[in-house]
Amino acid sequence: MKPVVVGERLTPEDVARVAREDAPVEISDSAREQVRASRDRVASVIESDQAVYGINTGFGELVSERIPRDRLEQLQTNLVRSHASGAGAELDREVVRAMLLTRLQALSLGYSGVREVVVDHLATMLNEGVHPVVRSTGSLGASGDLAPLAPLALVLIGEGEASVDGVDGRLDGDAALAEAGLEPLALAPKEGLALINGTQLTVGLGALAVVDAERLLDAADAAGALTTEVGMGTTVTSNEAIAGVRPHPGHAASAANVRRLTADSEIVESHRNCDRVQDPYSLRCLPQVHGAVREAVAHLREGVATELNSATDNPLIFAADDVDPRTSQTERAAVVSGGNFHGAPLAHRLEYAADALTDLAAISERRVDLLVNPNRQEPHLPPFLTDESGLESGLMIAQYTAAALLNECRATGNAAVDNTPVSGGQEDHVSMSATSAYALRETVERVRSVLAIELLAGCEAAEYVDDDLAQGRGTAELYDAVRELVPPVVDDRPLHRDVDAIAAAVADGLLLDRVGDAMNESFATVEEHRAPHTRE
Image 1 (cartoon, rainbow, N blue to C red):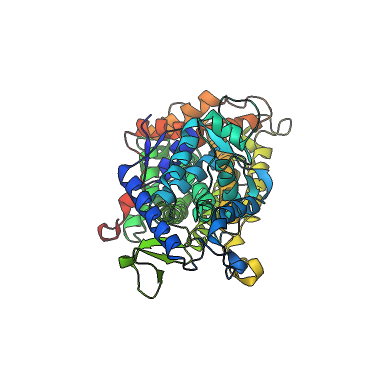
Image 2 (tube, rainbow, N blue to C red):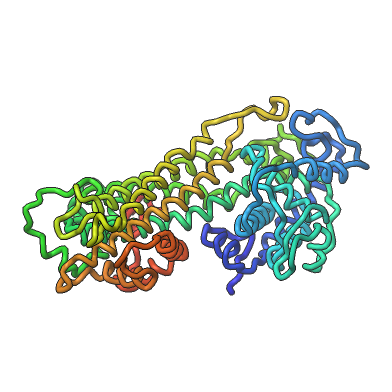
């Protein structure tokens, strides 16, 4: 498998490849040079004997405490031990891998002052499948994700616990390192703080969520196009002329997807001149609503991409010539304390994306109701999509489940506007960005199930459409792909496995890739519909 090169520009897809597909990592030569130069600058600061935060002082409220030179290594070890104080459930393997990769990337930019052996150890842990046990709760998103990042560093010094691929059970940190052919590290000055001070839990979760959310957007366009078709709606509302006079790029992308999915649909053509004047909003406003969600996710992608390639440590180590001379510096180095660890740039985008995806679930649930509700559905569809309504309930409770999932989405979020001062008041405004990232992750999973229910209902409704009428290029392939996963609902049966199977096919991207191949076009994106002067 092609390796992901650390020190070059990372993308959310790179994070997903390492976290989920175990793609190997390599450290670029230029990154190694940057790491070595940064470490040399830290050495010059130590030799100068100046009081510099993160190197020879206490932390947080204890910043005014000066630490003797002979105890600097103990300072870093104590920091890692004390900060590994999280609670809650243990993080999934893929999240731990995402954190390891993104912390490795941040350190490799050359502003954190760690030794080259530290980045080599992190890379080897990824490549050899050494995954520290990390508790999920404890981060405030400033000074970064301290409590979740500390267990990663704890394993580096041979403490804590880790799982190792191919080895049963948990291992102590030193035994886990030994499985990868590594010796525990004795942390040098600045290294403990560098390992735990940053937004890597937040951005790791955010990167995975971006990849997943973009698949949801394509799935929503596909499900909505199918519902429009089998519900005898019109696709005129996805006309290019409508999008052209209100040129939001997300609207244009979703409208293009509906046109591609329903191209050559005889079902759509069969009722082009019917008596219905307008469709319900859940069909008529599909491009506008889906498009707005697309733009929210695109905004998150932009923030995540920036954060993946940023130095989020504190303090940061610069060459003396690169920084204002009023900062704390020696002849060779400047050590600058700031707030790059603060998660606000991600927290608000994560919340916004979760809210937008909740709206995607809301419009999808309304389309499910349109297909199953005897008071709203088209005459060719039986109540709750079963021929034996009354004796059988058909998809009645599937719509209940969609409604329940939507309610859970609506009850999640708003962490980014909360604040609890900590560290004796020194850290008096925090971002709660990790909580926002968890909320988005949960929202993605719930919305995926809502869309799976719509796909299930759309394919069931297709069973009641005239067999002589062909579906569109994309919707026909979508129907076939779903039917390979779940059979028609001939008699009442539990539907939870059906929903899970469809949701899994959306999550892994294979269902959507197959539909895209059938359309002879990929799903449209926000970026390709941006005005030329606004594109990156």
